[in-house]
Image 1 (tube, rainbow, N blue to C red):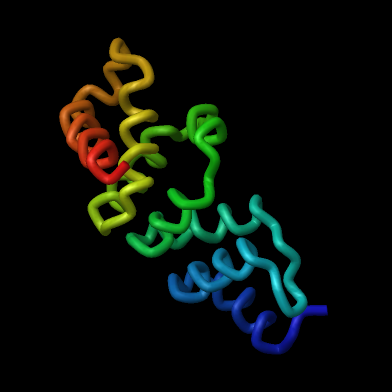
Image 2 (image 1 turned 180 degrees about the vertical axis):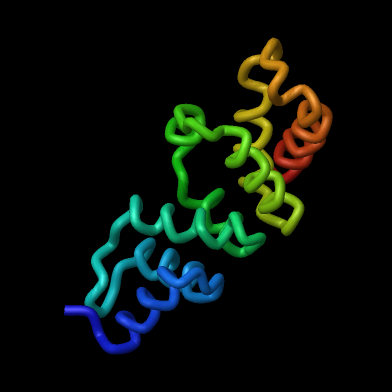
Length: 129
């Protein structure tokens, strides 16, 4: 059973509080106390926080979403924006995901305005090894 603190976090996350959404997403990533490890729930709450502009949420999403899931996502454009945001915040691995997502199909005009930035991210990732 969830602790009082976790129940408060869940209630606050449901009411749209960014810090609670970020915190709940992070807790579901790791599991703990009374909350099980649950990647789907984690991504839901982290996405809620990222939609509100949380760079920390974007970084966690980039660090924990597998590339194949990102490539299959219905809203790949949003993921690409979050990956780019995470890369700009210093998460080099997010730059590689950003580049792979944007550059996977050079003919995809939906990502045309991101391709140059994706190449920069790819070069940065290559320099970091």
